Image 1 (cartoon, helix red, strand yellow):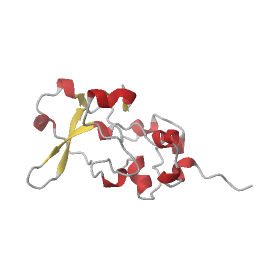
Image 2: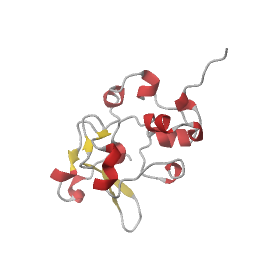
Image 3: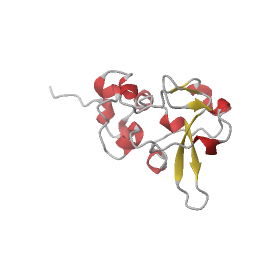
Image 4: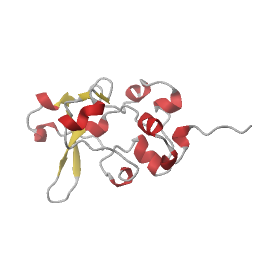
Length: 145
């Protein structure tokens, strides 16, 4: 018998709902607020996270009901994932939509959900909640989106 290809190496269109959801590495970077330059359209990262983001785990604290509390929360799908420019460069959805492999620190590859944090690829340790932030302009950070 041949080797079975891990689901995260399959094309996105081949994934079922549970596999799709499992691609998320828990970095939380898609849940930080971004500022857009009104003239150039360029996006800038802040250190301000959505109020629903558990900044330690990098996961939404109410994922199932998030849109009831945060109406602008984007639901990723195969139809929109390749079009969303602000997804982190390390986002598993973005990488797989482009046919790229997951990073070595992704928990599906290495088996350790803490690896994303040790690799410095999560929001752990450098973000604050939007409930505590005030003006976003005062929270811009020099981090790539």
